[in-house]
Each structure stands twice: as structure tokens, then as C-alpha cells.
Image (cartoon, rainbow, N blue to C red):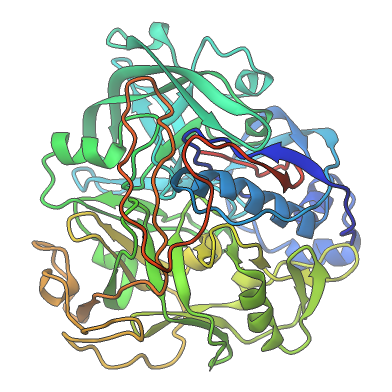
Length: 540
């Protein structure tokens, strides 16, 4: 495997930026390009056994780079997402290589939830690296795939006026698809690692999860080349923060008349067979989780779904690396500060640094990682944090040492496949329970209405009885508690500039003494960034 690299220079834009950037690991590229040796084929042949895909032909541009380079690229692009509040960390130097090839993308469709449940199935690409929902736009209900991204405040789709090469390979939406589409004169733009998505803000009906809402979203006339590689046609931003478009959660709150301002997500693992992934608005689905559903208060004022993480560890041994964690369905893997990630891998027998923040781990690793929130451990088994073998016979850890946000972790789908996640906007908290079918990682502390975490100054609970969003009904066997915790750091700031002409910038709260130092409004600084185009470089 190769990890050497020359520098690539890119600018951090001061404008509103948010993005989703999974990438395709080396073993999968080797498999799809026909370069995989027999041991790799044997290793991955069960990943899609018994799974039916919808196959759609499209040309694509992929990057022939190592796992470590791709991880560095994803981390760097994620900095564009989190820089909108001015606290992105410094970038790491790496290289940039390109490989163009034809490809086909796969869609693993989701089972349709019962009508009237305010739920929608979450499809994926068949490799667990991107998850998206099919919405219907306009009076003619044009179907469009939109990425489910809890780390993005903006929503947009590709428009019929788009002339970019990437748009030619996607579903598009325009006036001929709806008699109710209203084009505004307001521009929107979202900066990415290799360019930007830009166009006009538009107003029309979006239908998803038994809801039909009048919504102002971006209609892109120009998109970055990265989108040529992926099946979905736009981004559905699900953070609480403001972006270039109207905030989708605000639109749901005002227009859907749901009992509670919550949504809950279950992500499917492709190797598990039938896709039962789901996003549900207004409540929870008890069938999607087992045991205790427990909440932790959001630890920032920026509108991000960021909560204090107690710790991470391996095989029951804590690593002592707790910090603020951003819960981001728009991120494929897990990213953390270099020193913390090194400390975690030091506890894994046989793990070794592979450079650029990547670590190899024994392919026969049988013990699990665990992550602790509000005193409860949630398991991440080897099938999620250990990659399949590459042609060199090595396996890479899906936990990378790239400090995307200063002093904080980014928890993506590597973790989220193992839990049922509830995003409670009413009470500014995130809840987890073990996903149905997920393995237990030992006995958690007994539930208590006043459960505490090491970062909790008082051990107080939220105003949701038993930690359940008001009015929702837990399964009879479940007990649910809520812990209010304060972050161990003061990450504050604001969206430096609106991405649209009419949207207003979010006010900046006062920074604490521990606030991270980041980029500030109106200042675009050049930094060393990483490789540019990957096969799973999706941005929102």
C-alpha cells in the first residue's frame, strides 16, 4: 500500500460550507476494477450474497489512491463542512492522483415502512458508505435520491439547467417536472474541496415520510465533479444549524404538525441482507432497537448534533480519550485527533501505523471497539471497524487520525450502523439504543433517572420523562433515561457567511476560555489540503 504524497493546496472558503465525504477503500476499488487477487475475492464474496440491487449505468471518475490517502481526503473535505462555524482543525499534507474509469453504481433499496408512520426507507450504495432517501419533488412527484446528512444545514438537488459533467449522470429536476416550481432570484453556493455547488434557491413541494411540505431548497446549475461517482442526486440537510437553503427541520416543525420535533435513524449493513434502514419523523420505532434508549444533551450552541463522548476503547479496556463527538450520518467512518486515535490503536494487539493517520489491524481481529455515551457502552464489531483485505493482504482500521474539528471526534456510519439514533430537536439531545440485532458489549450501568457522565456537573435529567420524547411509547421491555452533560471543550462560533443572498447568518455565541481556535468570518486562509477526487466524495 502507498502512503507517500506531494502537497495539494486548496483554500478554506469563508462562505457557508457543509459537506458529506465518504470514500471508497482500496479493497473495494481493487474488486470493482477487476484487480483483486483471489484472496480478496474470497474475503468479500459474502458481502452481497443474497442481496438484490437496482443497477444503473453511469460513467464515473474514481481516484486510484491508498486507503490512507482517501481517509485524509475525506477528513480534509469534512473540514469544509465544519469550518462554517470557524473551528475546523488544521489540515494534513498528502498527495493527489487521478484514475478515470467507467463504472456502474448500485442501489440497495430499502423496505417501505407502513403507510401513515411518517417514516421512509433509507437506501444505500451496497457498500455501507453512503445512505440516502428517495423523496418526491413538485406536482408531478419527481423521484430524487437525497443523501441523509445530519451534519449539513443545506438541502439541494441537481437542476435541469445544470451543465456540469456530473449532472449528466444523475436524476435532474426542473420546471417541466412540476407545475408548482417557483424559481427565486436568490443565489446559493456551497464550497467543496474541488469546487462548489451553486445555483438558485427554489420553492416547491417535497414529499417524504408521509409528509408533503412547501420547501425552499437549492436547485443546482453547477456541481463539483465528485458527484459523478454517486447514486444520489442531492443532499437532505438534517442539522439544526442554518445553511444556504431553508432548514429542513424548521420546515417540518412548521408544516408537518407532528407530535414532536424528533427524527430517528436506523442504518442497514449491506451484508445483513434485506435492507430495513429507516428514518422516522415525529417519534421513534421500538421495533428498530433493543434495551435502553438513553439521551445525552447537545454540547454546542451552533446547531450541530454534537454531544460529549465519555470514552472509546477496545476489548473492554477504556483508552481515556473522551471528547466532544459530532454525530454525522454524512460521514462514512470515524475521525479523531491524531494523539487520541493513536492511543486507541495502541490498545489493539497487532495494530500499526500506516501513515497519514491510517492504521492497519490484524484481519482476524475478533474483539470489538466500544464507545461510551452517558455511561453506556455501544459496541462496534470487527465487521464494521476492520476493512476487508486489500491485495497486499492487509486490513485497515476504519478509525482515522485526522482532526476534522479541533479537539473533537466525528462519529460516522462505522458507529451508527450499530445503534438506533434519535435526534431530539425539542430537547436538544441525541439518544442511542442498540440496534435490533446488534451485539451487546457487556452490561451497562443500571438505568437511573439521575444517571451521570464524567462531564456532567449535576447529573440532572432532561424534561422528557424517562428520557423518551414526550408522547412516544417505549417498548414494554425498554427502560429509558436521559443524562444532561456539558462538553469538555468550548467549541463555539458561527456560520461565517450565508450561502444565499437572502439567508441570514447565525449569530455567534460568546466563546468560552476553552473555545477552539479556528477560522473566522470574512477570512479565507489557504491551507495544505489533501487528494481531491475519490469515488465516495460526497458533499453537502
